[in-house]
Each structure stands twice: as C-alpha cells, then as structure tokens.
Length: 410
Image (cartoon, rainbow, N blue to C red; front, side, top):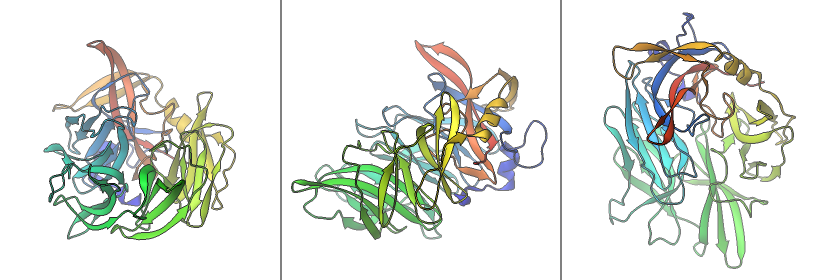
C-alpha cells in the first residue's frame, strides 16, 4: 500500500547501499543489509516479508500457519534490534496468518486466534485477549489486514467469538484503548459451523473482505463478505468451487486491484478470482503458484517452476496470462552471489560482517512469497536473506538479515 512509503530518514537508515547510491536501490539491487538475529531452520525460512512503520522501525516475523511457534524482532531506525517475543499464538489449530498493519511506532500481526501488537521498546502483547465486559476469552476468527489511523483512534475490523458464542460477531477494534464496538451478529441467525477461508484488504478504497463458509440446514454456503473501515457490511457474493477448501487455506491474504477484482491462491494451487458479481477458480499453467501480489494497482500470480521464479498477470477481466520468468527476482538472487558486507547493529556500535553467497531467506527465490511484499519506497521493498547455518541444541539455526531491495513486476 502506498501509505508505507517512509520518510527520508528511514531510507537513509536502511536503503543506502554500500555503493553509496543516493536514492533507493535499482531493480534487483540490495541496499544496506542489517543482521537481526538467528532463525530456526535452514533457508528458505518461515519468515514473512518484513514490514516497517512510519518512523522507519523494522518488524520481522517468523512463523507459519501450520506451526504454533513464532518469533518477532523489532529493529530501530537509528540502529539496534530487540527480539521482542516468542510464541504468542492463541489456540491449538493454526499459526501465523500474517501482518495486520502498522501505525506510527507499532505493528500488529494475527496468529491463531490472537491479535498481537509489537512495539519498541515495550515488547509485545495480545490485544483484547479477553472480553472487557464479560472476561470471556476472545478468539479473533478473522482480521481484515488493514489498520486505519485517525486523530481520534486507531482501528481494524475483525470477526470475534467467545467459547459460548455459536457464531462470530463483526466488530470494530480500537487498538489504542483495547475495546471493540460497532458490534453486529453474524447472519443468518441459524448459521452453524462457520469457517474462515481467507481475508484481504483493499487499501485504496478502505474495503476489506472475508470468505466464510457455513452450514444452514442441510446446505453449505460459501460467501465473500465485504466490509468498510467501520465494520459495516458493504456487499456479499456467493462463491462456488470452494466446498473442499480447508479453513484458512488461501495463501497469504486476498489481494484486490484498482478495479475491485480480488484474487488469492487456494491450497490446491489454483487461483480464485472474484468481484461483487461472482467468481471462478482458475488452473495456472507454467508454474506452481505460491501467492497473489498487488503492485501499482495490478494483480500478479507468483510462483516457481523447476526452481525458477515465475510471474503471471491477472487482467481486469479475471483472466490469467501465461507465466514468464521473473527477471527482477533473478536479478536480486544474482546480486547475492559472492561476498556481501552485512551490518550487525544488534548492539552498538555497529560492526560489519562478511557473508559468503547468502541466499533468499523467504521462499524459493526473492519476492516469491504467499504474502505480497510491502512497498517500502517507490520500486523498493523489504526482504530477508539467510547467511551461515549452525547447530544449536540439536536444531539448525540460520543467521538472517533484512534490507531494502529494488523490485519490479513485468
């Protein structure tokens, strides 16, 4: 989203390259890389594309929808890192869904049934872990991945449910005061077995979507439900072909183009494309689809084939073009060859370390992720790379760094 473009101080802190370029990196070029810590596993690691707040602080999250383990780090724009928390997932069925958004000096993520806030230097905490009135445990069944900042409050939209509720409620969450309002019960009132398949946000028009599946009598219904920034329903549309999709099976988040067309990759590798008039499921040729990205108002399916990064455009009519090699990804991978200088500012003063032939820490190739990379500046995103791997207590740990890198889609 365009709102993630950062101030000049943030670009100076992170995106200035060793070659002393004055502006953001060119396509495939890496800016200053900062070593933030050691991550469980070997590359590719279960890291989400990093994000940043408007002060230039960086946020890194390790976790996966199929694992209950999480780790999170916060990097200050002026230097220094803090491993702020681990294992904040709530529930026993699902792990990290993704980032929800950021504000002036905080970021939020959704893991299992928990909404978690990250801040520097205060660390992390669950938001609305319990209902302020009844004291009942709250489950965040769905979260629209968008945080709205206003002079009066900072909010997001969610579907929440307590153990005694037969159905969730749609609510507006006040992230500052940890209360919720604009509460509306899930309709129809006789719905049962409500499941969430995926969520998404269109940051240009302040619209969010939740794909729900539920039972009504002997029938199963699947719908895309659209909400505004204040948790008010806008519209809904019935969707077919999702009877066998697993809960939270849509990879990353659903993405929308400037024309209001939405898309996401299903657990089968097929692509769901829909708008307020209906939708359909596509098979994708020429790649194993990983996720759908939004870039400059357009949608792209990304994936790989025989280890090569691939990308295909989704046109405004919902058709998917033929997959082609993703040149920007290949350029970013090629730029990692050889020995790179990595800034280690976990404790100050910062030192410089040399990593030989680091590799992408996320996905099979740079930019290939279920989650759409956040715009950091024009033509630039944040990405993570992996360095040396070592054994620690019987498990593999990999040194990892984050930096700005020039990105483009065909």
